[in-house]
Length: 313
Image 1 (tube, rainbow, N blue to C red):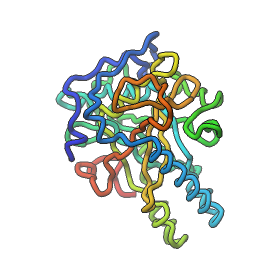
Image 2 (image 1 turned 45 degrees about the vertical axis):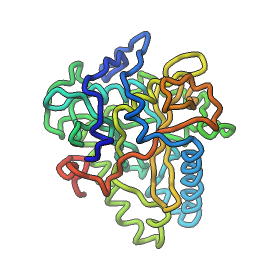
Image 3 (image 1 turned 180 degrees about the vertical axis):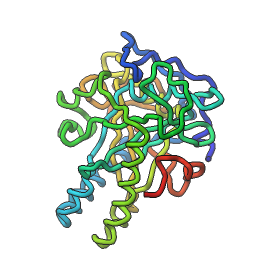
């Protein structure tokens, strides 16, 4: 695996956040991070917004061209996950007791045709860490099929950011809180990822040119420090981010990219200078930065061939 994913902190941070057990700390703490290591994933806000806008325009145009596509592949604009859900992944340890090196995001598809994001942690070798998340200790290295992953984020639509601020939020989006249960079994997640790959392999044959305009991959990975930098952002009142919103983006070559931003308790995105973390999120949007440029699979799939989430349908 490239060094940008393995270059992770050697000591695990004490997150003091809600985990799968549902217990909440009254005062969340900053996560230990190295902004220099996060910089490999940081891009200017302007570029991130361009990706997001291009994705929405292309997706909506394809739905108009082929109305049947949405019923089979309903792609949201974004999906949000609470701080506690992200913390539960960063708290995972590999078989040697080392902390998770980062978070990998898979594309899945539920039985209703909705595209879903599935989050797992990975170790310094790039191997998925799939363990029980709802356990108080979460230490047992059970087989992947008995493990759990993060899913069931807050989708936009229907809970979408304010139209006046393309990365903002509204009161509906604030429904995402620490009590939301994002945990599903690895077996259920594997069914989602297999269904997504099977459907995506089939649809382009029925809609000519689709894969060149909207080209999905299997997963995208971000190192621990990049995730920590997002969680350490503060809103205008000095409160730490309460979660992370994952936007769908599209580059000029038709490649899907994931763009990550932190949000506050009201669901509003916190825009700041991530390369100068911690930031108060009070900078003008023109100076802001977001997380993108993850490690994409394919081509960089490495040790994933034996993961339950990467099995062929």
